[in-house]
Image: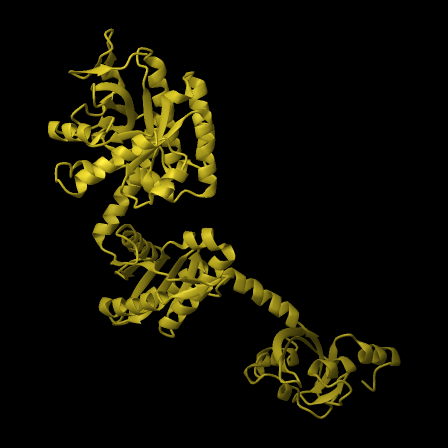
Amino acid sequence: MSNADPTRDLMFQHAPIGMAVTDSSGLILEHNAAFSQLLGEPGKDYCGDVIVDHLHTEDRLRGSELRDQLRAGEIPYYQVQQRIMHASGGIVWARFTVSMAADAEADSRFILQIENVTDIRRARELLERRALYDQLTGLANRVLLLDRLKLALAAHESRPTTIGVIFLDMDHFKVVNDSLGHEAGDSLLIELASRIQASVRPGDTVARLGGDEFVIVLENIPNQKAAEGLLTSVAAAVQVPVVIDEHEVVPTVSAGLAMAERGITAEQLIRNADIAAYAAKQAGRARVEVFTSDLRNSALSKLSIEAELRTAIREGELVVHYQPVVELASRQVVAFEALVRWQHPSRGLLLPDEFIEICEQANLVVPLGAFVLNEACEFIAANPRFGGRVFVNVSTRQIGAADLTRVVNHALRESGIEPHRLGLEITESGMLLASDDALSDLRRITELGVDLILDDFGTGYSALSSVLQSPVAGLKLAREFTLRLGDRSSGDRISTTMATLTKSLDMYGVIEGVETQAQYLLAKMHGWTFGQGFLFGHPTAASDIHFLDDGQVAIGDKVLGAINP
């Protein structure tokens, strides 16, 4: 800038950002020290070089149209971002602000102000990546997945191939997290993500939706058979054993496959694959299901039942029926089991098999369980002639985090009954899977004076030692064994052994499912003290149970003996 005044020339040379003057062909006429620093060789003289020779090849034409407008006087200046090839071999992102020199005479001269915006660019790219990619695995997230699937569906309309979506849900992932810790769980997810990515084709998208759920978009897949073949490969890759914190884990997946249909949206296609994966998990895990309209109808039906169930709990459509437990020797009623029913406004009385599973899945079992507990306690309080107990089934979801002790305390306090009048039944499998928090909750309940009964004993394959270590006061032999009474083989031996065990441990033993006189006589002969089943009475509404003056109990049109208060 030889024609400039000394002050302006000094400002040019010592400016903190790169500055250069070029002619109309881009030849560098002057530059400052910051310009040399920016290109990676401080102190080097770049005069005589052509500026575009220091740019990335893909950026050399960028801004040419704006330069023409600047030369024609249509704009006062322009800005453009371009990549400078650093002397080290790397890339520097720079923002060029280009204007015409005010004192240009015969030849056009351009003044370039060049700022290093690499850090800003990287920060923006990082934010964009976080918005589109899963931070743990580096896979696409839901936002990017939907975007790519929408584009694929739009392009698919003009192609002979189709699109498939695979939904993968890891089996028993919670067990890894709970037993080995969340860091181990994260390590497993990273490994599985790598395996899935390596098993698909280069153009396919693999995404993690969060937790242990992954989705694969199969673009330009020939047909459903080809998609199923690829899914088989993915599942096989996932199931290779992996060592996590010195523990060998054999991961499996429940997988669902859905194929694109005419007019389907990205959200609907993913939902269809999710429905199929859920069906696979319900069928026993480590399975593959292909989406069908029947699966959709089943899912819609469950959704409808869930909505109705929420209304039922809120509107008081649930009722509790009571089935007697008798002393086998006298056939006196010593207890009742409280069993929930749903008085559906249009479908009539529904048994638990028709709604309990959905109740568990929808996290409605906690309010449902509290309702049954309160009803059972009120039943005892409303019948002072009855001196026995009422047993209430509890789910593992009610224990621990849900603070069952608090719920039981509330029910006892509101009804005013003694704690020993209430018993809680938990399944053998539920007891085996109970967490430390759940076991602590159960111990607090027993300290209140409420007995715990192990329900459906014999179906959970637990060792007797686990029963002895649990805070239980009794057990119920599962109905499956009652059906085998009289086989003069394992059925009779198991029944006799369990009856002897309960007596030797001074436990409360009940044989369930007694439906015939022959089963009743065999149960007594094997040494069982208490029995329950249709032979003695079906579950009955509280309004149809009457406690008579002579100590007997009238259940519907049937009269049974009863213990006195």
